[in-house]
Image (cartoon, rainbow over all chains, first blue to last red):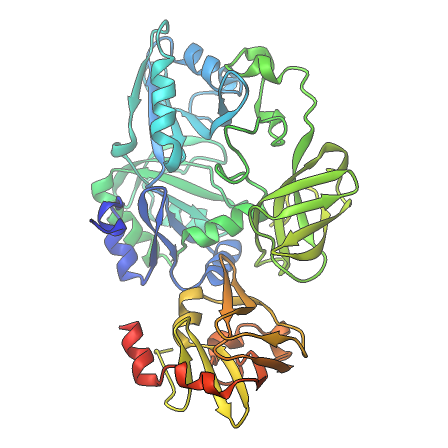
Length: 358
Length: 127
């Protein structure tokens, strides 16, 4: 029988990870770096300086043609007509019942004709593409699986933009914008987005040349950061992780993502979300004493029980933090809760978003 | 820090060690265990006076990403826990056989010692 490692996909930066001493682990069918020097150290590098993540496992779907905007308006939860050329927008992909298929960033690409690029989570890419493709009937649109076309590097941190600027051939896109830009002499798509709560640039690059960009970034003092720190950074910033905080069994309203759902656009799932008063809400929380919450830990509140969906130690706050679905009446910042961590009851309090603001 | 397995310790296959002195032993985790876990950020010790059973989980160490049970290489009663680890759990990484010790135990069955591995057998297990 082949070992797991033989069946895992590798990104174009695999040799760079090995050279940087990465600890490689299976993640969503890929062999990915979970850490290099250590999660805490890498986390702090992104908060204080600049780090680069290989996120080439993430997928892309390109949607183009005269009906592309109308199509995405029907499929995505946000108002795609508000997405200007060169803009970026967060949205959900929902089923008819409002269950979340994925959470996504969509960019309206500059150039001739309507063209959109949607970035998918690695674990959901094939399902997302299939869902989009099967709903394209009736729209004058071409839906293309573009995952093999791009390697993706996320450069994040207060010094990230300056580091990328030094190797860029032109101006970088502002926050929540996208633009074609040469980086290390290679034609790329630059995006002013990220998943850490820090400023930064995400770079979509031709896979065969991604290694050159990686090398150029490291030469500028940017440090490699693994998926371990990616998770702690996004959790401090209270960004959702699909599979933890979002799933087919949860809708965007209970997940606190009503802001990304424009019900009057009549996207698939909108009808189920109208006038919805969710029994539970996803909220951030922080421990007030020792311990580290973990996914699946039961929660007790004054108004009933809930469940932790993400939990970790916060390297910046140095306390246990997490997100949990709680009874709506208990989902108020400041409310005391108790988290059962493998049989030990740990004191915590509901917090506002974000848990850590840089 | 390079892998290190002192000669004077007895080892348990779950990557724990015991430093035995008569009917008292100090327990800890091996270099391999701390390396596999990564930087330890939380150690939850057992209560002094509680009993531990050979091969049973008696404590937890956590890195940012993961929780790992710590298994007792021998049975006995907890005499002392390493209080310094509550503030500095990373000592488990920095000095797993010294300042990173976990508990001191009054052994209840000295015959169990024969079931532990010596350093050569433990190294064989790792290779």
